[in-house]
Every structure is written in C-alpha cells, then in structure tokens.
Length: 396
Image (cartoon, rainbow, N blue to C red; front, side, top):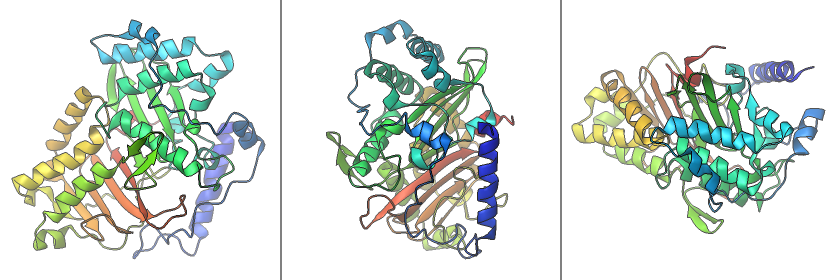
C-alpha cells in the first residue's frame, strides 16, 4: 500500500473510532471529555520504523546557530525574491535522498498533513527533520524561516525557537512517545517548487507548531492554518534563555475580555465548555457557519484597539509587509465579526477559551491541563485560520 492510501486508511479508521466512541462530541462539551493523559505511543509499522531510523535526540539549538555567509548572495529588497533564493541555496547543499524529503509536489492533501502531536505520534508530516541537517544547513533553514516570518521578540521566528526549546525541555522529563520529544524532530518541506511564477508552500512544523505560508506568482496568498501550542506555560528555562511563547497572546486576549462590561461579557459568553480548539489539525471543516458571541461593532474604540492587538499576536508572526495586509483585511471585516469566550476572563484556568469569528478570520485560544510534563498546571493550544484562504484557497 502506498503512503497516500495508507494515510487515507488511517484517517478513515480514526473517523470510525471517534464516531463510535460513547464520549464523542456532546452539546455540553463540544470537544468531548478530557484526555486522561497523553496519547499512547503508536505501534511500530514499517513506515514508522523507517522514520524513526532518521530521528535522534540531540537539540538543534536553532536560536544559537549562525546564519552562514553564503546566504548573503540572497539579500534583496524584495523579500520573496530573497526567500526563493534561500530555498534554492538550501536545496543545492542536500543529497539526493535529503532533497527527496524536502522537495515534494504541491497538493492540498500534503498541506493538510500537519498536527500538534510529536513526530512519533504523527509520522505523516512531510519534510526533513532539522536534526538530519548539518549545522550549516540548519543555518540556511534559519535564514529561510526568518525571511518568511517576523523577527519580533516572542513572535514569528523567535516563537519557533522557543517552541523547539520546549520540546527539548519536555524531552528531559518525558518518555510519552517512542520518538522522543526534541527540537531535532521539527520538519521542513517545500510543497511545490519555490519560484516567482509558481504555486508553492513553505511548510514548517512539529509538536505544538504549524507554519504554512503559501505563495503564488511571487506573492503570499495564505499564512494559514497557523497552529501554536506550548508546554510548559507560561514560562520555562531551556537552552540558555527564558522562554515564554504564547504568553503575549494570552495576555492580549485576557486584557480584552476583562475590559468588557458585565452586559458585554454576558453576550460574549459561549454555550458549553471548550476543552480544546475545534478547528485544529484534520478538522478543516469544524468552523461553524453560525456566529456566536458579542458583535465587535458593540465594542468601544478602546476595546477595538485591544482586539486589534490580540489579532496581531497571530498575524504578526509573518513578515511585517504581509502582516499589514492581513490586518487591513480583518479590520475591514469588524462590522461582521464577533468574539466569544467560556470559562474565566483571565484565561489561566483549565477550560478557559476565547475565539474571534469573522467572515474570514477564525482565531481560537484554549487552556487545558498539562499532558507531557507530568506537572500540575495548564497549557494553551491556539490556531489562526482564514476561511477564505486556508491552504492558499486551493482544493487539490
């Protein structure tokens, strides 16, 4: 059985299992019951054994690796031109086998193969593991990701580094998966040939992270789905620094929610309890058609400013010129947008949840119990989607 059919069969079996589960989605608890713990390790198959043979447990230390001088040849005022040059530079350094993992044909099916799970629990991700690359090659990857993403502290590329550091941290205390938690296991792929006149996606992801920028004719046409999660939360020490990704997202939404009047909070309160995000991996059709919550048009100007700041903690993960375009698009939709939450407005307790629902924009932030550190506490899952341009608006 080829890889595509095997993935389809696995997805079909999973759908049947969920459907038959007595604890499947309910009106009171839209995301079902709390997991009792981390998912069990998957059984070994020839496919997973082949993947594990490529993996290791050494930190990639992406925050400290130097960008090689060879990347200077790619410096250009047009950042898309620079980005494409950097992808070509990386590919020129790869063996034929490594290149076969990095460069794939474009397909929405491939693009949808992202997850919040570690590498051993979701081997379907395309791409090459960061740990398979030489230090110099990782330096080129660093240049690629910095060109595509924001370089603001705690956002964009810095958020990527901190999420990798979290996996190194978890790897020191957890053995949940046969394929260990490690920054080694982040993956990079180019879906489609990176060119100025072609359709392609820069795919980067791993445990608690998905970055999926899609380009067409030399322009970014999609930056979603974009997933972020972090454990431990809100901060931890690892790889020589304090790490606190997603703290600014939480704080921005908490500031907005606590600014609401009692009447506004009542209108913004969602029915039921949300134990996780609903539009996560392999849940591309989960966003409801009917909006629920408080109309953004009912916010004061000061509250609208707080909403913009919260949205920008997501949109601001991409290059600033493209982030500005997204913010203009979403600001024009405010009259048709709502915000909703459940739990507390502080967003620091289990089952606290907030979302923004517009004609295109969908953002969720969900607090849930720790799963991988074996320590009391909660950690967030979060997603930014655009119902008009997810996966570049492509359907095949």
